[in-house]
Picture: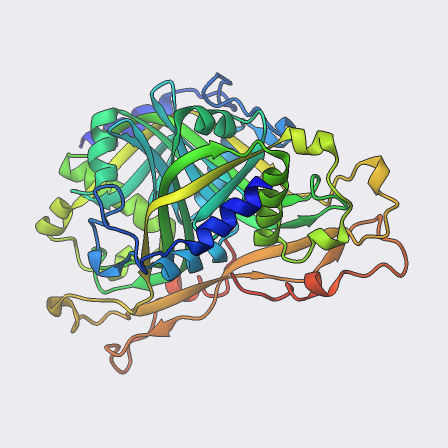
Length: 234
Length: 234
C-alpha cells in the first residue's frame, strides 16, 4: 500500500504553479522560449512517447531512449531490470530526462535565423528503483497508459517473472523547464527585404491505421480505445 | 583548407563495413534488433532531425536536444557558442549521441511483449570544437543540409558575427550501434490463443505544406528544394 499513501500525501502537498529556477534548470539560450510552468512541462511530458535519459558510466556520459510515463510530479522510466540505464540510475542517484517533439522547420531569410519549431522539456530529479511489487505494478500501469491508453484492460495480468525482468526507475521532479517554439521566422531588419521566401514547414507525427497480425482470429476486433488512437496526432 | 585535406584523407582510409563491437557500443538488451553496420547507422543518422547528446556537468549527467548533420564518420552538433553543451563537450572530450525515430506501437497480447517499432542509433566519439573558420562554415553547411536540403543556396552568406555566435562540435565516430524494430508482435505461445486483437499502429512523421509568413512579397515563391520537402516522411 506504499504507493497509495505516497500518492495521497502528494495530493495534499501544496505546489507552486512554477518550478523554482535554479542553476540546474535555468534556460540560458533563447530565454524567451522558456517556461517553468508546471502545467506546460506536464503537457509536453504527456504528449511524448519516448524520453531520452542521461547517466554516467565510468565517468563518461551516456544517453538512451526509454519508454516512460508521468504521474503528478513523478516520471517513471521503463527498461529491462538488467539494463544499464536501470542499474546505473539506481546507483548514481540523479537523472536528467529530456522529451522533445518536433513541430516543423522555420525557414528564415538567413541561415543564422533559421530554426525549428518544437516542444521540449528537461527534467532533473533523484532516481530511485521501484522495487515494491505493488508500486511497480502501479508504475507500469502509468507507463502503459502513456503510450497505449486503455490497452491494459484488454490484457492478462503480468506474470511474476515478467515483473521481475522489468525495471522501473522513478524520478521525482526536483526541477524542470520547458522550451517551446511555435513561430514564424524572426528575421533581422537587414534581411526582410531580401527576395527570399520565408515561412514554416510543419512536421506532423500522426498515428495511421491499425494493422492486424496473422494471429488475429475471426470476430476479434481492436477495442474502442485502440480505434480512438487511429489518426491521432502527437 | 584543413577541412578539405581532412576529408580527402578520410576517403582514402579503408573502413570495415561494421563498427567494432566493444564494451562501449555493445547492445545488451534485445540483441536481435542490434546492428553495427556502418550503412545502417548512417541511414538512421541521415533520417533524423534532432539528436540527443549527453554530457557531464559537475559530475551530473545532462542531456539536451541539438541540431546535427553527418558527413562520412563525423557527426556535427550545433548550438550557441556559449551554450553549455558546446562548452562542456569541448572541455570533457567524450560525447554520446542518440538519434531515435519512432515508427509505431506494437500491440502484443501481453503488456510484457508490447513494444514500439523504431530506428535508433547511439554514437560514441571524441568531441572537438570546430574553431577554424573554413571548417566551421563547412560543418554548418552539413548541418543545414541535414534539416533543410538545398535551402542554403537561397540565402546570403553568414556574417562574421553570426559565425562567432554559433558553436559547432565535431564528433568523430569511435563506435556506434543501431537498434531497429520493425515487426509485428512476438507473443508467447501461451498468449496466441487469447481473444485479444494484436498488431501494430504505425506512426508517421511527415512534413505537411509550406506556410508563408507575412513578409513574403508578391512573386516570391519557395524554391524547388523547399517544395520537394512537402509531404515527405522522415
